[in-house]
Amino acid sequence: MSTTSAGRTVPAAPGNAPAGASELQVLHGISAAVGRTPLIRLERLFPHSGVEILAKLESVNPGGSTKDRPALAMVRAAIAEGRLTAGGTVVESSSGNLGVALARVCTEHGVRFVCVVDSRTNPTTVATIRALGGEIEMVTEPDPATGDLLTARLHRVEQLLERLPDAINLYQYGNPANPDAHRTGTMQEIAEATGGRLDVLMAAVSTTGTLSGCTAYLREHAMETRTVAVDSVGSVLFGGTAAPRPLPGIGAGVVTEISRSVTPDRVMRVDALDAVAGARLLARREGILAGASTGAIIHALGTLVTELEVGTRLALIVHDGGVPYLGTVYDDDWVAQTLGAGTAELEAAGDALLARARRA
Image (cartoon, rainbow, N blue to C red; front, side, top):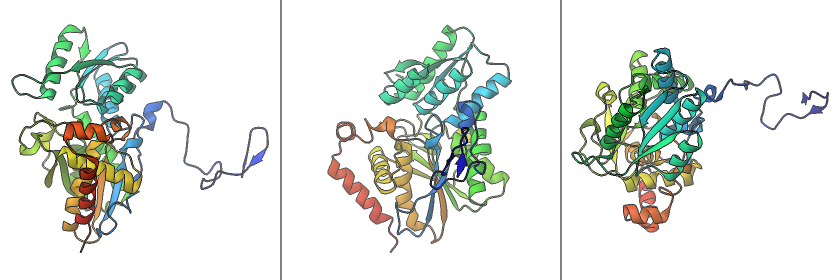
């Protein structure tokens, strides 16, 4: 029971601690809500795998993705270094999630934000960036020399920095504050929740900030956790071969500076159709609506899980939520037009993944 300001006694909400015993508190600003995301045990995804599967739900961050962590860290570092002040301008390349996070953080700090995106970025994500006060620079043509859209975005950033007075680029692809946000945040939280006992960590890669930061924590604390980088087919990271990548947010067309500082124990590459099948399977089996990068992790996990010893404890990162992907990953017409696959083929891919993950 609890007592209102008028002296009326009311019952506590079901499942909640009485007033005064809760850990909930008033936070100072939206950025204070970044991090401390839940770690969820997935019991319905691959129930016959013999592996304990834990999911770090980064999609519940204020901006809906794991990019909230490095966005906040990079802006704070730039302010501390004197590179950025209220009224200044940040210009950054993003496939979407970092753009949303930076739009929010820059608005909170009174900073103008210009986000360079490309034609693969989900329309909902573009609209979200604008709604949060960000400005959009859309790149529609790939770099003529490399055929890569990311390279074209980076060139546009350079042009804008020359044009806009006192503008800065946080450069997420090489900024040390990016992986450090995951070293002191994401991985520390997973380690605390598991008592330091974790056998395998799976993360999707683009800048590789998440994997790099998590790996740094593991090595600093002498944890023997094996790391699995989930990359897209067509990405050049970790020795990959360049090819078109229809899904944003996973893989890269250039070798990022951060990626040179980390060596995963294993790299698994997933094509776009399998990533879609993985995302849909997670939604239907666990009720977790996630984006394409998490879908790629789910597919990679389904192919890996029976290779692991029974009783293995594995954690994966749910990098973002699936709402921005309702018009792509979760839209049958888009999948048919873009990936050339029908509903029956997607369902068959999901069924095949479930069968593969079943331990004999």
